[in-house]
Image 1 (tube, rainbow, N blue to C red):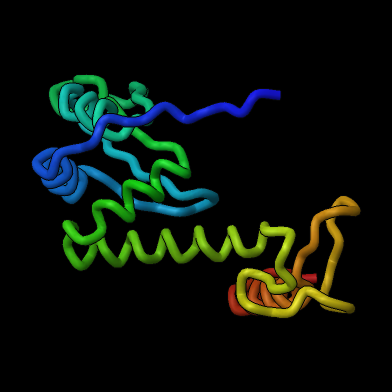
Image 2: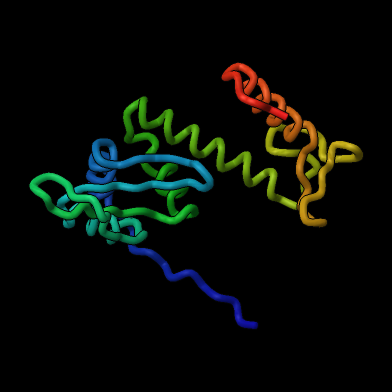
Length: 166
């Protein structure tokens, strides 16, 4: 089987990076729910097309309507590309955005550690050996301590709200 090569990207100028940082500072979001995500949304399509040319990603139209009943356009980058963008633009962003980026990258790194098969630690640093392993679907290792801590927190939250927690 032949190895696939990733096509080389055209280098991005410092001016373009500064523009992208400024634009994403005001219109973008840097999140990590289930995977890292950099998005920007607005009524004008042209700046989002410029982001797409610079960083790749995809554009789509949101069903809701924006200012003056115009469609809202959304640009987003995939998980791998989002991490690259976050790390590239970090030094150009405000402290608030740097905090968002740092949190997203930290969560991404913890998830990668948990998913790697060569490690004996979970994402929170617990040993994945002996009784601390819970097998999911017969092949995925989960941390029993993390699972129990999560369950305890869920029960406490339900108990505080007066809801059943059995």
